[in-house]
Length: 149
Image (cartoon, one colour):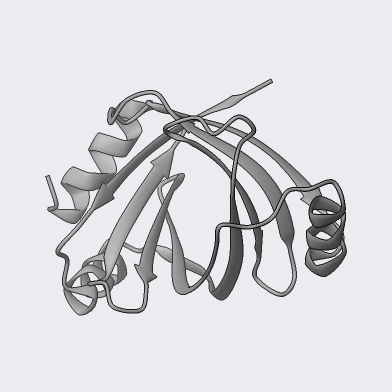
């Protein structure tokens, strides 16, 4: 069964300002991660749906993401934890599914009153934050606390 993500991306942020605000609000730093991911098209290729194989070196997941709208609750996700990114990549390639891309990024993760706030750093992109929570109102509340909405 799909999980509905309640998530908002806020672009054009200053990571130092966000970090300072998180500190002043008492957010707990959960961790820092260096992600590597392979991205695959679905079969047949479907707009706004893709498969992601991602690892932070400790936890590896295989996920299908489907964007139904740009709303906070507009993305569905099916995800399982897998044991080995290299073996899953081989399995997918053996059944004819080859990645369309490879990506790496760095992430800082914080917890603020039950919401997940991450600062993502991607090559050639400006940093941005993602706020994810149990429902849309919690996402909006957290964004207001951070002064980004």
